[in-house]
Amino acid sequence: MAIREKVFNIIISCFKRHGAETIDSPVFELKETLTGKYGEDSKLIYDLKDQGGELLSLRYDLTVPFARYLAMNKITNIKRYHIAKVYRRDNPAMTRGRYREFYQCDFDIAGQYDAMIPDAECLKIVYEILNELDLGDFRIKVNDRRILDGMFAVCGVPDEKFRTICSTVDKLDKPDVLPLDLAERLLQDPKLSQNKQACAGLTDMKLLFSYLELFQVTDKVVFDLSLARGLDYYTGVIYEAILSQTIPALVSTPAEQNGADEAGVSVGSVAGGGRYDGLVGMFDPKGRKVPCVGVSIGIERIFSIMEQKAEASSEKVRTTETQVLVASAQKNLLEERLKLTNALWNEGIKAEVLYKKNPKLLSQLQHCEETGIPLVAILGEQELKDGVVKLRNVVSREEVDVPRADLVDEIKKRTL
Image (cartoon, rainbow, N blue to C red; front, side, top):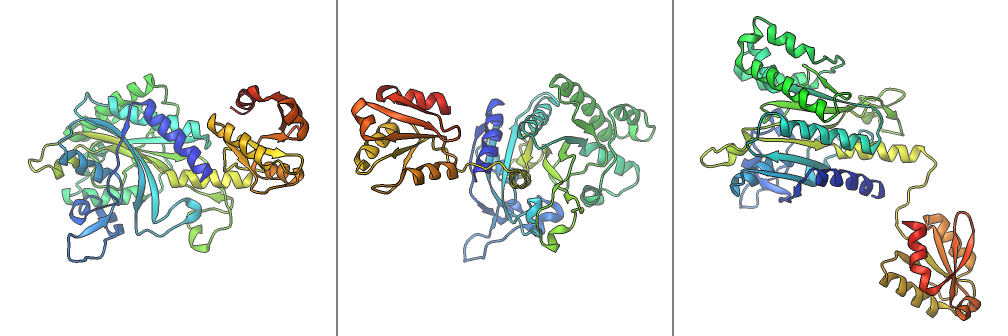
């Protein structure tokens, strides 16, 4: 949880830096709200037992509930983030961060805006978060559903098969990365240039990359025609972030080793998203559309990597934030320890005291070493007479006498 909290803080501060507010929604929705929004993945939705009321299901993602919320409340523009648990009847793979109950971290921009400006900001957010989490090299693959659909149409794929084929393409291994001049070449293609959808997608792709250059993220973003994203509701730009390297394998069950090589665990996508302009309209009685674009950070996969990195390194992860332990060097000083601890709490200092009347100094120091508390405030008869506290640095073992009046400032100076 300490690692998770750190990750959440990085992600939330990024969302806030980009001006987002937060919302929450119920953990279950009407079954009909979720039905028909996820293509063949609908079979992974958990249905709640019918107890003679409405048919309900656990939410599968945070995007469909968001669209339902916008439609119900007649909201036409909002920039929001939502961090909450979602549920899928999937085959869990612990080392790859795939669970049946897991967190999603979503950022979405809803509203009628000029083309590709909000889309570019979503990609900038993915770039910032992955950079700050320091997970190693990554790539953000970008494509557009309209280009895919145009290509399928030109190749003679019947309309009703588009979504199924998208889902299949999404599952292919996609090693080839295709550069941006490809958009130019495809616009010149005699067949594809006749397809309105594909042309609109390719023109927007060029515009998107011009904004991404201004946001200085093109070193990590690639145009990849084979990217499909399996969800039914995408209508335009789609993207996915992939880590470039595998992570060291820990002990895993044979069932989890699918997709893992000898050297490590292939983590797959760590963020994904896209534009879904038709979803809100599905929930509006008059079919009023609210264009939306968003991104979901694959937080569980990121946790897996961070946790495995922590296990591989010798550095101990601190699970508390205590700045100082109030200790005594002699017996019968419990009252003084409690009084000092109380004074520190009242000043907003994170302080602890051992729950023993007469603990040995050694066991108090050991507690600090085990839990990573950096400072010990030691009281003794002499210190009480002189109106000072002996402040000890646990790692360097250096000690200084600090006047009572200066103690709070001294602790802050050494720990913040």
